[in-house]
Image (cartoon, rainbow, N blue to C red; front, side, top):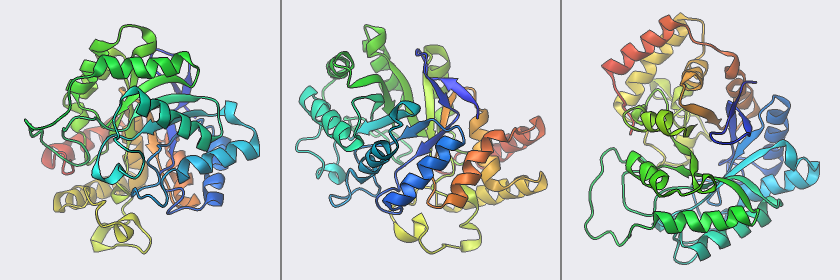
Length: 345
């Protein structure tokens, strides 16, 4: 396994990060435990969760993913072997069941951290992330920013950082990061940071062959500000595994179960997927290997968050850390991207 330092820390995390958002809904507790056992045996030391998980969000299952991780820690007494990341949910119609008046005010951050620690059965979280911005901006499949003059949000970057810093000082969290954030928000948080302990060190955003929008502005931020991308949806909700090609929708797949999770299901996304499939086949690779190896190759990516509902998928995903794409393949990928740029937002 390859490892890379979390920016501005001495913590080394595996290039492959284990995503967990299916545990508690698509995966049982025992299946989650099996995935963690296998991942750790393969050198994966970085797990990513969220208080919202599993997805899609609902009141009945909220927090189950963290709880499953917690029972695994208790069962194996191996907390020190894992670099653990989780997230606080932002405001939204689909998160009202988590807490009243969701915001990033100190009281809400404190409550969210305490509840996550309890479910996770741990005394500390290595990386604590803001799951998405409080303000109204383009996230979760929204391609363009639409200014809303009635957005009630008021700038509070310093206050949010201070609230997080108090939890760092208390030993509850070690480092802080962002998620689903845009260049302006990233830079404002970095500008507001007064000490190393209040600096955002990572941003967790979608990044894949079907969505390379991160490259437009945020990748430069990563390089110049020493920020790391934790790339999520590198297989574009499974589309880049090839299992939906030719109109197929396998039973129990995400598109079969959850119709709203369809941001990668447009006509051009499937057209581009077919092109990448042919490229992979021409070079003796699976489409999954091509897609994940591409993300692993990017210099601004600290870790690539993979997820799986079966052990077969998990084994293939983790094994891609060994795949190195040739200059010829990378050039061909860019040619497809020029022809069908960012088909998914």
